Image (cartoon, rainbow, N blue to C red; front, top):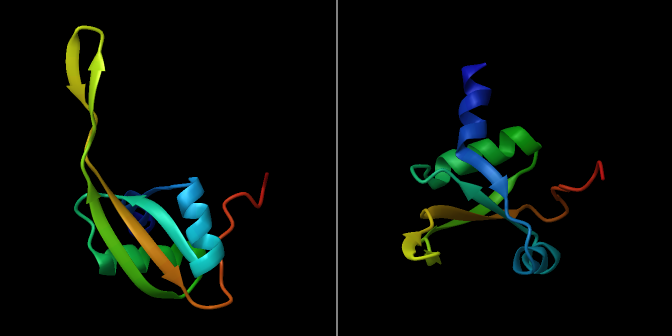
Length: 99
């Protein structure tokens, strides 16, 4: 059970935006929000086990949080990490299958 729990800690959520949808349609890529400490091997293992697909390559990047103003105080959003996962040709992950 702790193995599945750690997999879910690595993958926080899929990022569904216009840009990520375009990547999915053109390059068979899926974008995830991942844990800041996760490396490419951990992300690959988590995606392959949870979604039963084969991963070809992974690109990761650290996203800096934006500075925002909340009334009179200045604040800052949290930093986070993004992973772009390229799947093997012919495979896909459908996040809206139940909808």
